[in-house]
Amino acid sequence: MIVAPLPWQAEAWAALAARFDAAKLPHALLLTGPAGIGKTRLAQVLAARMLCNDPSAGLACGRCKTCTVLAAGSHPDFMEVAPDDGSRVIKIDQVRELISFASKTPALGGHKLALIHPAEAMNLNAANALLKCLEEPSPSTTLVLVSHQPGGLPATVRSRCQAVALAPPGRQASLAWLQNACDGQEPAEQLLDVCEDRPLAALALYESGGLEQRLALLKGVDALLEGRLSPLDVPALGADLELVEILAVMQQVVQGRIRENVKSTSQQGGGARRDAFELWTELGRLQRSIASGANPNRQLIIEDCSARLARTLGIVGS
Ligand SMILES: [Zn+2]
Image (cartoon, rainbow, N blue to C red; front, side):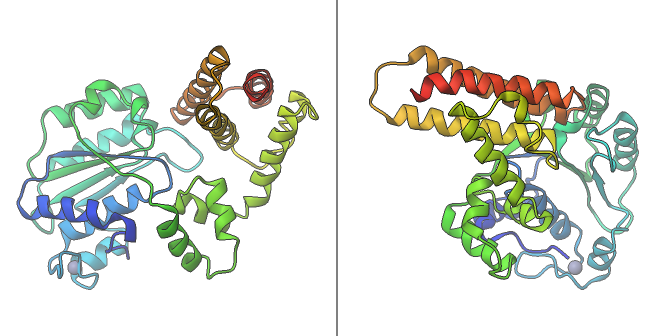
């Protein structure tokens, strides 16, 4: 069971734990930061600590009755809300269950914790229903919203939560952890490169065996930018990847080019830079809308974004 924070979360955890010990935790927390750096895991560490009967050294003991039922997934004072299998959306019925959970008195101790992840997956009805919970908080319930894209949440929800921004760990910390998690078997450096130093994303990629596909897609995008590949050929490259993953790879390429361009001393290409920023923003917007349940035509989106990539970065790169 998860009781300890990840190595790079020590500081963030110490701050959260101190506020909990001082009974100064707000009723709603919003943990933000890139996907795959351990935000949900930190929320689980907090849940375990809050619910444990016999914490030691500031962490849940992992052995008491409440820790045991929490590990078994049957703790009545802990609720996890995430998209159901096969869905990308958190629906209003799930939030209604949460509201009912929040209205009850704790069954086993003094606290209850509800974890919503990723919070931007709530559709508008679900987010509106959650507002009621945020506006009239139950004193014994802490809500923890985890969000990779807090911009995808309604401002009314965001403003009623206290945000805690978590940064990705540095390369050294990521590498040490990932090498250990992969038993030193895999090219951890390469995994981290592809996943932009997001260690849990890198581990998920390792476990899914998706590294090859990602690398093939990146190679294909290079060929596209060099004019050796048509936008119409790109959809076939990432056949086993989720559309959001493909868009994220494209966004990563655009971001890399923008960085290179900013670093270069060239005074030219302001318009091209602006186009690159626009494309970067659009790719982010598309990922958020898919995360919130939009289901666009995969083939068309990939072709269209590929064509825009070729047009935009072809100019920036020259
Ligand atoms: Zn315990």
